[in-house]
Amino acid sequence: MARYIFITGGVVSSLGKGLMAASLAALLQARGFRVRIRKFDPYLNVDPGTMSPYQHGEVYVTDDGAETDLDLGHYERFTGVSARQSDNVTQGRIYQTIISKERKGDYLGATVQVIPHVTDEIKAFATADTDDLDFVLCEIGGTVGDIESLPFMEAIRQLHNDLGRLQSIFVHVTLVPYIAAAGELKTKPTQHSVRELTSLGIQPHILLCRCEQPLPESERAKIALFCNVRPEAVIPALDAPNIYSVPAQYHAEGLDDEVLRAFGIETAPEPALERWIDIMDRYANPEGEVTIGVVGKYVGLPDAYKSLHEALVHGGLANRVKVHIRWIDAELFEQPDSDIAAQLEPMHGILVPGGFGVRGSEGKIASVRFARERGVPFFGICLGMQMACIEGARNTAGINDAWTTEFGETSEPIVGLITEWMSEEGLQKRSADGDLGGTMRLGAYPAKLTGNSVVAGIYGAEDISERHRHRYEVNASYREPLEKGGLIFSGMSPDGTLPEIVERPDHPWFVGVQFHPELKSKPFDPHPLFAGFIAAALKQSRLV
Ligand code: GLN
Image 1: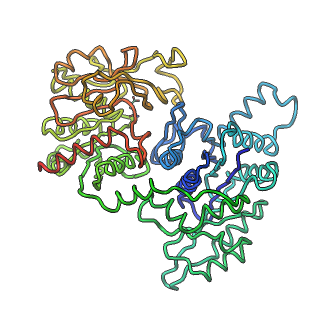
Image 2: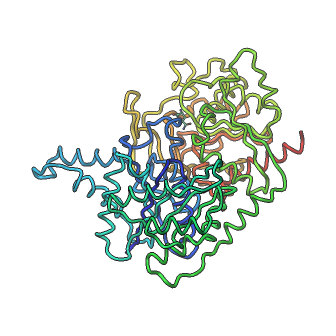
Image 3: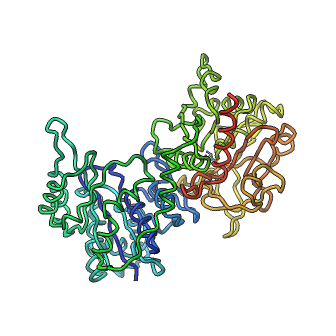
């Protein structure tokens, strides 16, 4: 039977619980255990798909087509275990399930209540589909004391009892702030946070204490005493130089040993950390550097492009170079006096990422043109590929009015709404006036690559599968004029109807993809397209 690790947070939000969960899972996996991480989000949206990236950061998409919290991206990047729909639930989804059951009469006349109905639904979610696992790590979003997270706290309290002895533990993540004026680390917020947690019936087994300064033994002992845990179970989590050094750092502080001890597991192999040590070495000792300009819309919030940022870093690890990312607001290039060349000339590669809406689109199209004309490596992702096709249509195929129906009516729909397409589950349909949530082409779809294409060389394969999240598609009926202009459709859906990849073979590196390759990149297994793009940027850096 799977064992459960419930991870809660206290004192403040943004402590990086997701990264901690991912790092702990990576350590357990490195000891040979089978792990899976789940995220419980207390907000009332059914999923984060309709939330602005500015509110909630990136929407992470799974192979099975779920729009989920960005923490699932960390989970995949650290463990390599593909996340599933069943690994992220929101309070909104829990209520949606309960209300639809109530309407069907499934509760047989009972009064439907938070306890037991909501808590039962949460428990059912936590324990579903875990037979083949050794550990399930459940991260509870939010901070202890939030009204919204109460049903989740109650559910894990109950589950701890239901599961029986030594089958589950609580790990609480807190902050030990450094007060510069006093020159001291303060333990009081941690004490209060644990008190809040115990008032809900949850006694943590392990405290993971985020701190900017090393935690002195005296303070560790004090936290242990006041919070009713062993001193060894107070794990200092000092700020790390980069996220991929966190697993090794926590191991050095004894986190995984304490977790196993709390479960009463006395014999477990030492973790095989070679893969993390190699990544840390590549990270710390780059042999060169490149600068990539990302021309997008949500450039003010790094979390909005979390996976993209990480995938570029992975591309750097693959080539042993440091990647500097310049986030450029596409709207800047729409000002009449903007000097696009001055902004983009220092870049060794230009990337136009995914996005929604017309704002900044002419700036993106101008960036594509700059990259094409100047021979600068170009990578277009999702909306970025659509912009590359519109640029190609206007400037190399003479279709001056080229446009996408996403932004309004047009006589030249280079990109348009496709209302029917095939998936493994059969014919999928969507309509222009359908719901916004959950109605896009979502999740993994196969694509066929042309044998002698640039991308087939990069992948080393002709059959690939990648994750999608978009409503519009490049219109295959423009294939001929676009290819005459040098933009080759080198990847198509297996039925040949949907363009999935375009490339310019006469350019040093110019690739547009309709999917999101950044979602599948891992530090120990960089995505080939990102490795290839950074390799091309490195070549470019030696030219300029
Ligand atoms: N807005 C575009 C579409 O819906 C692209 C989406 C994206 O880049 N994820 O097709």
